[in-house]
Image (cartoon, rainbow, N blue to C red; front, side, top):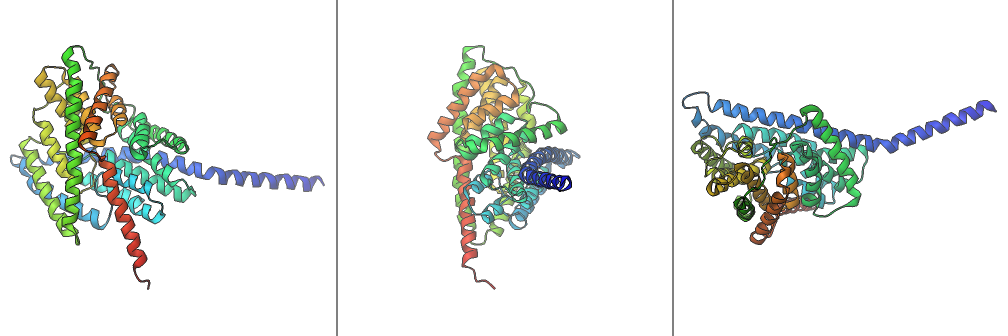
Length: 448
């Protein structure tokens, strides 16, 4: 009797253990996915920095090396456009529209066309390739698509059914790890990715942001993206910057997003029905134009623009027309459809615009650069809370909290008046429509 009772107890404990393991398995897989996003984000950042350093070294290694972009940039643009169209479809552009589109799609195969580990790999490789050619792109938007792809793979492997929530969590974790801005990752997920607050997903988002942030923190250390800033308005004309940077930055951001949506639609119509060859020609033309702008600007418009933006935040005035040149290079990079984001270039454009305003008005360059970033970035993405939080976390300028908030809101309102459709959501509709068309085409095709 005692022996059979012990056997019964052992069997019961075994069942409890395996039952507990099956319950905990999805959580363990989810945590591993969030940690992986942090690790991959740091690796992505290192590769991006190496690519920019490599391009800078090549173009400054000889007397005529500064002309190398006239050949290198268009050729690499064409190669990147070809690879993204053939080997890694739906890796084009920022990556944020793909993540937004995937949240609106209900079919798993449709989501997989936009978010997969293969696309994530291609996104990293081609973004790094673009930076090696001097493209005015960033890695932060692509990190969102990479994070969302990892989380969607986690959902399949761990048997988790909350695909929409996991995409949201992966996107937030990507932003948080890319900029070392955990609060901005959460706000970005709520305001930009979902446009609503979803109580069921908040635990996933918070957990993913914390774990990816810890992984990035362990590898890269604690840092502010643009260092420490302590600029604050001290004079009446400093407060005038709020209006000028808010309205001016918002209008510039609206122009960028409006033209991107308009010309993007025109190009898609022009490239049909065989888009590969026309898109390669377009990528080459855009690459050549970016090379010319970069050479004329002394190389300032190549790459993410991080160094120029940080210089302005530290109080060093940028050339008066830098923001115009950088805006043009960023617009052409986006128009070419090569993989690459607009977050970092947008911050550089905003910092350049603010620096120019500060130089003309005779105010603090550091303060005007920070407010310029807030106004322009809010105008481009039409997400004022994200703009405010991300710039506050990146600069650590807690003395200018109210001005940054005010500029972000004014930039958003100005942009909303001039351009009714937010950029990322407008672009996401393209991917939603393409995914639906592909499904219908497969449904109508004859089976062997």
